[in-house]
Image 1 (tube, rainbow, N blue to C red):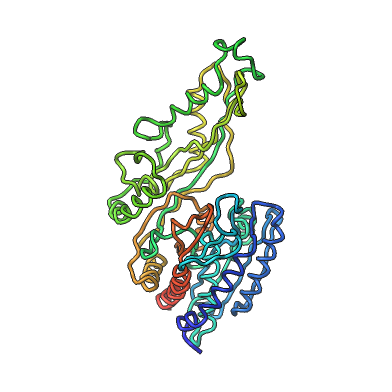
Image 2 (cartoon, one colour):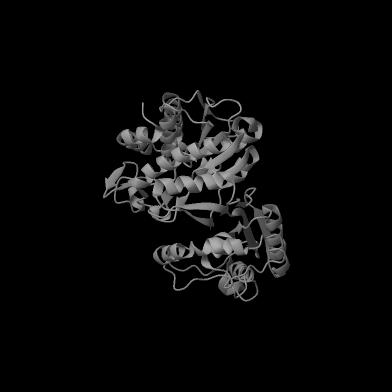
Length: 461
């Protein structure tokens, strides 16, 4: 029997076949009509965990959940060995050819070394790469020196109610020395990156109303403060000319960008600038001029207006003076910011600047999530960096990403250390049409997780 690396190399073709099998299952947690598909995938994943040698595996659905999680455990390293918890999600966003796909979105298609399919990056890549890495260890002569737990979530794309309820009720089931979150992406096919910071998030809606009903603009225009106009006047006061959020107290708790942060993020800047030029293609970069692009995108908080609605938007003209208008707003949060406090600051500021000629109502949307900032010198991070260097042949760079991964904060409640390990690419079009990965990223991901388990076992052994 081979060592885990040899086993993975020998079984590479089968690994790819099983990966494609999972990709074909329409695990769309946001659409109730696919609940059966999500459940079918959960059963398939549970069976796979048992087949690869996990001692226990079960499908779990809490009363508060809609789509199940799958939990597998292997404790063959013994009670004194460290435990590694690996988290991934197997649900995906909706996809249809009409969205702009050039292939059938749930039919894996390989072209020039790239696999196109919904979930190829986000996040069945991580599910299968990590499962196959664990299989490679459990099939080898020398077993891993760490105990392993694998939790696969089925509703990450639609609220995470099930796993949040499970962690709250049974934190001991996911207790670990190191939690690995596999989601997201690296910078480039040949340049791995490790995320050491994730922004938090909070959301709210602003509703503005003036007249009780829509009015004839000829009869009443000029005597009523148009709610759309009032809404725009309020929103225009939420930032200054530098792009800084103009809400009193908004920055009070923000963790400063340190000299060490800047030194790390300057290594990322060329990659992010190239991606910005390719993907964003706006006339010019905007935002706080005193911060470099990676800091604006990952280390600084933002207030974004995500949508505005009001009045008549159909074909032709309707000379209406609308009764109401509203905007959707989200804030991406920096470390130390409390989502509830930020929402209060924004709501209070809006009420203070709102004109007396309209009524405003600010409504919170969801509990929000705090930002995560990890120690780049921790055992988990150092082990992941060495694993990436082994798999890619290049030292990783460290970045702080602008997205929010609420499960990271939950994992910090049950694990002593946390690290994120991503294998896909930012250019892989996650959530969009023609989502894809380079197949080499899948194989590198398997090899990286094999190495990570080896390093952690040796370090704690």
